[in-house]
Amino acid sequence: MASSSSTPIRRNGSKPKQPTSASSTTQQQDSSFLKSLLPTPLETLLLATYPSTLLLGSLFSILDPSARHAPYNPVTQSHPPSEAPSYFARKGNIFNVLFVKIAWFWITLAFFLFLILHPSTGPSRGLVLTPKRLRGTLRWGLVTLWWGAVTQWFFGPGLVDRGFKITGGACQLASAMEGTGGTKEFVTGQACKAVGGQWRGGHDISGHVFILVLGSLFLGLEVLPALVGAKGLREERIVTGRNGNVRRAEREVVGGGEGEEAEWKTGVGALLVVGGLSWWMLLMTAAYFHTWFEKFTGLLTAFIGVFVVYFLPRALPAMRDIIGMPGV
Image (cartoon, rainbow, N blue to C red; front, side):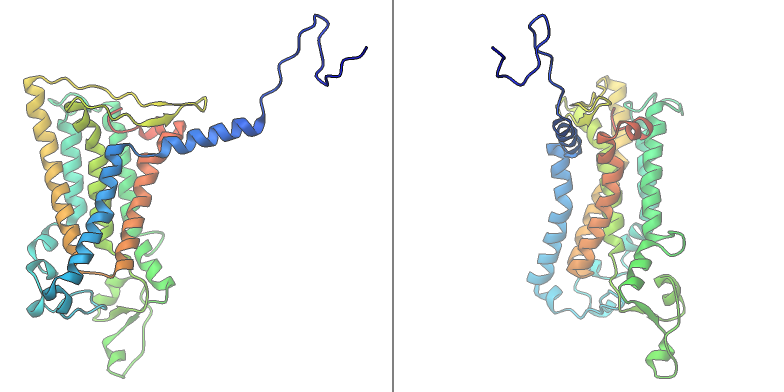
């Protein structure tokens, strides 16, 4: 009597192994890819600091009577100096002029002090180009390229200026405002303001929010594995291997000798100062400058750059082989 089973049977009576479902394999790969993109608890806390800071500053601007009633020019994005509700509400305050305006210089300086002095990246008693230092420099280069593309140059004007013009912005000269002329074509806000014009009509991504978030988050993600290792905590990141399986990234443990402790303080000190000052100026920006949506787009634009450099490589082994991961 013939068997009712549709499964073929070999001559020895055994059944052949069924092929693995292609859809099941694809689902597993997709799950591994997404899982490796997730931040660790400490990274989540760090990331949450930024929208929380913007929310806190924005609420302060609403609840504080002096900030709420202070005159504000949305075109120049500033308070009149004589009527500013706070020293930090003046564009000419020393922290804005000497820190925020040249923030990428301070961020770069702090990062390379950490990269050279911290024992987790290589010998701190000489300028030795170790693989970790090389990959750290590559990550800095990618983040710097994103900063430059957004604020300085992207095959012409930066993305901030391009976005402003795409959303209907233009330069209105003083002569046009007086009724003796019209608008003139300028491709950047800086060029417009240099001739006495006003950059009007479009959506202006908050450059202050963008650079302060991008720079301090870049520094925070670079130093976090070193801080975690120094305190003996476990905060392992998940990465996707070449076979598609997820695994924990192996973090190198740095010794705790007396000499290394001094180097740790030297390398991390400048970075923490720059990161802390960036957070304070971000809070002041949220309280006294820009609209909610301008601040949100500045935050989102910074997060995009950080995601590509620090989270995407966890799911892409080939990219991870080139730029590495902090502390690994």
